[in-house]
Length: 65
Image (cartoon, rainbow, N blue to C red):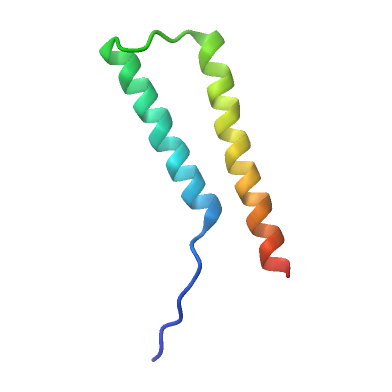
């Protein structure tokens, strides 16, 4: 059986990276390096959701071609 090279799943990769960065930000907050409140956390969360949706839309458009 021959294996073919598959392209990476961009939405899953983006979601994983977003979760990694969000986890790092929250860890820095717990360590006292960053001081976050809801006013600064909401744009970070919305940006993360937007990045995942953007990657999903871009990869879907590439599959249809």
